[in-house]
Amino acid sequence: MNSFAAYIQTHKNRFLDELFSLIRIPSISADSTYIPHMHEAATAVTKALQDAGCTHTELCPTKGFPIVYGEKIIDPTLPTVLVYGHYDVQPPDPLELWDNDPFDPIIKKTAIHPEGAIFARGSCDDKGQMFMHIKALEVMEQNGGLPCNIKFMIEGEEEVGSDNLELFVRENIDKLANDVILISDTGMLANDIPSITTGLRGLSYVEVEVTGPNRDLHSGLYGGAVANPINILTKMIASLHDEKNHITIPGFYDKVEVLSQAARNEMGTIPFSKADYENALDIETVYGEEGYTTLERKSIRPTLDVNGIWGGYIGEGAKTVIPSKAYAKISMRLVPNQSSDEITALFTKYFESIAPKGVRVKVTPHHGGEAYVMQPDGLEFQAAKKAYLETFGKAPLPVRDGGSIPIVALFEETLKSKTVLMGFGLDSDAIHSPNEHFGVFNFIRGIETIPHFYTHFTDLYQANR
Ligand code: BES
Ligand code: MN
Ligand code: MN
Image (cartoon, rainbow, N blue to C red; front, side, top):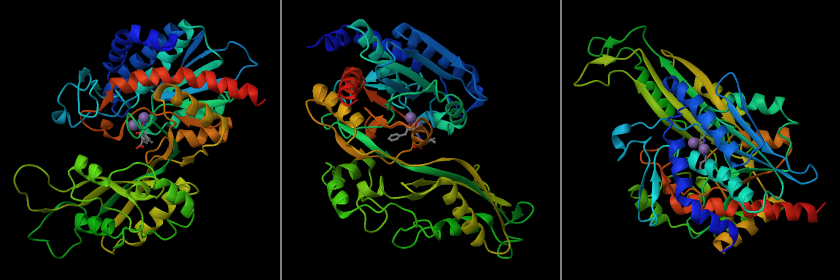
């Protein structure tokens, strides 16, 4: 065992305790009731960075929640790694589906996590993964010191669209200058199949409102004679996919990146069991766009999904009513070359055009962002690969993921650097869902792997200059 691994073993329980304290702060960015806790979490992250070895930290105010910045610059001629993460979490509801209090973490064994997993909101997305980097800094500092410079930028609005981070990045280009950005906010294939995320999808998110009559009406007196906004909305939504599950919005696919057959064949070699996937979700069969595999559908193809739909009477019993309004929230996951603003505009135009006379339609855009892909041939991927080889004994597979971290494309545009997505979560960790968890193995293995990335990146950087 090298000194990093030995140090981590000795301090493992303290690392977990410290993570638990951070998780206990309910930093839910979407819910204004939790504003004080957002500030509490930002302060706790600042303190953790100081304790781990940052020589300079700042709690940077924004119009929304503060961004935590920290750094340790040891030598300006050495490369600089910028770590990004988020301290905000998704709302935990529905609460009744949790087996424990989402903000009081417990460790439980599961079939996939025989060494135990931390069950709590934010355990994986992203407090647990972000905290691995803070502990990795401590590990390096306590075992010979950093091989290069380090900067941290931990935000509190990732789960609500990172609106203020964009401005912060644009205004602090020099402060954030770096040679590579390192993020752990994605997943890997399995605990014995390490992988690195080489692609993220973009996002366009809209809310739609369909208005019929000026008030809720008696469904007997008026039923049949006026447009029912819920009937209309559901019909409109249903028409957004054709019988092959292609999206029908004109122009939607115009700019979609087309993968070569070779690239698709390569994707086909990624270990994936359709049967396990179906079993884990209790579905008879997968469902999706004709002509694409499940892995392709959930990573390299764009999608359109209703995230929520409401209107009319949903209380106890029956109320005979034609509602005045119906609503839905719709997300579109985008792939390289599609522009989030363009897709939002195409959606809006088309959705308005398919509304029948008798209803009015309003489309309100929410946050969005562009897709990101990295080629697995740069220094940054090579350094990460060497790091995984040391701790997993296997090279990580490059895998394109389906989720979105919109700020990554902006980093490349503004800071001109590549991002390495060293995610240690598993798809089955239930992020955003009840009973979110993060393997203790994954947490520790992450802390072990990260310092090796710093060493190898510094070596490769110096050998290539
Ligand atoms: N960490 C996730 C994104 C993620 C998870 C990417 C797993 C790939 C694999 C992030 O916190 C997240 O939830 N992003 C949102 C988008 C955001 C704009 C709200 C998402 O993907 O829905
Ligand atoms: Mn996240
Ligand atoms: Mn998330």
